[in-house]
Amino acid sequence: MIRWIVCFCLFTLCSEIVGQSTIFGPKGGLTIGLQAWDGIQRQPLFSYHGALYIEGYKEEASTALFAQVGLHSRGSSERIFFINGSSATARRQSFQFNNASATFGAKKRINTTGSSHPYYSFGVRLEYTLSTNLDESSEYAGYFPVEVYVNKWNYGATFSFGYEFPFSEFVGGMVEASISPDLSHQYQQPGGIGVISPITGRGVILREQQIRNITFELSVGFRFLHKVVYLEN
Image (cartoon, rainbow, N blue to C red; front, top):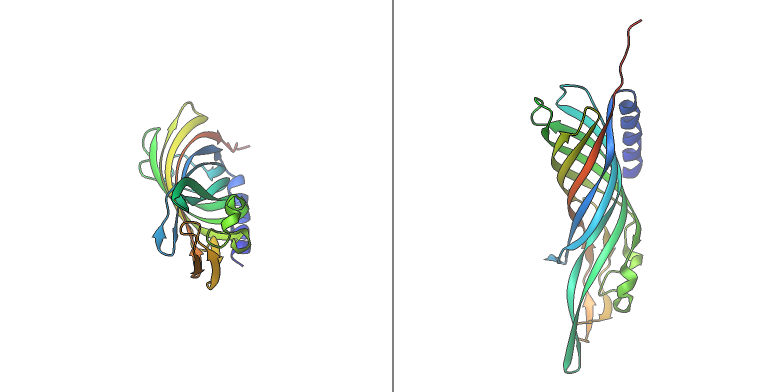
């Protein structure tokens, strides 16, 4: 139900934006993914993201609606020490969820005087998981996440702060920092599963595992103005 509501809102928003002057363009940059398992914070996952966006434009207006679609990596990583008899080895294992994302919301410019503006925005997101890298740790299935318990559909919010500046009348640039907490669980694994710990080599009974994503993103992008001029007859 959530995804149909979001899709309807996106369609309505885009229909409203298309009939007026708009700003659109690409943006992308560094992604820092975080997850907590059993209440314990895992280490960050460093990756990249990219998106296309469109927003309404009206001269001197301080607010605008926007819509955005993109590809984002969610997840975390862990440095694992494996014990084999009297020796131990270590490796860094990432747990990556590659999600297609659709976001819509509102943007507020803090200062509308001049040609450059700081701003902040809030949006709601709907995401679908296209792929994961969980098969890389399949020998420890259950102790580490496995594909069967991945929730394909997820939703959450995105809060952004940024700065936009012009190169010319119709072309500009932007830099942006955002935080995107999920409200749904990316991963849900029931408790009571018995597995062999890759760390100790002993059998353990796992508790229920529910994992949410929190993602920080640093973006740079371009802004292209499509200006609609109405002429009186």
